[in-house]
Image (tube, rainbow, N blue to C red):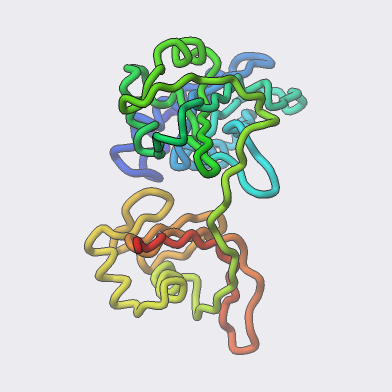
Length: 276
C-alpha cells in the first residue's frame, strides 16, 4: 500500500511537512521498484532522524543505510547520504554512497582557514548545499565531502576562499581525516525519565531554571525547539537535547535503577567551549 505523507504530519513540526513529503515519496518509490535503490543528497541529523522514524512507524519493506564519508570507532560523519533499498540482501559498501573527499591545499604558513570560511565559499558556488557533507580538520589541514556528481564542478570552480588561493586534491575515503570527537560519556542519576528532570541533572540546574530556558527557546530536542508542554514527556534512547550556552547531550541507554528507584542513564555530552 502506498504511504500517504499526510498520515505522518502529526508526528512532526508543521515546517517539516515538505521534508516528510519528499522522504515519503522516496520510500514509496523504493518500495514499489523491485530490487530498487535510491540515494539521497546529504541529510542533516534531523532529516536522518525523520527518515528513520518514518520507516519505523510505517513498517514498510524498505530499508536504509547511512554514510557520510567516514566512520570509525572514533566517530562518524554528521551529514550523511541515505541509501534506500527494497531487497534486504542488497550488498552495500562505502562506494555505494558515491561520495568524494577533497583536501584543501593552500599556504598555511601565511593564511588561516576556518569552518565558517569554507562553509561560506561552498555556498557561493551556487548549488544546493545538500551536495556537500561534513567539513573536517586536524590543525591546519582541512577536508570536505561532496557527492560525486558535483565533484568536478567543485574542483574547477573553487579556486579561492576569502582571497586565499587554494587547490582541491582528491583524497581516498580510506585516508580522510577522522576529527576528534569532543564528547564525554557519563552516567547520571535522575528521579524519573522526564525531560525536565534529565536536563536539570545533566546541566546541574533546577527544574525551574530549565523551564525558563525552554520558554526562551534555548532548548531543542532532536533539533526542534522544545515546548513547555513537552517538559513532562519522557526521554527516549537516541534523543538529542541541546541547551544554549551548555552544549548538547544524547541519551544512550538506561543502565538500571538504584535501590531507591532512581534511574541511571548513560549520556554522551558535547559541552560548549568557553572563549578565553
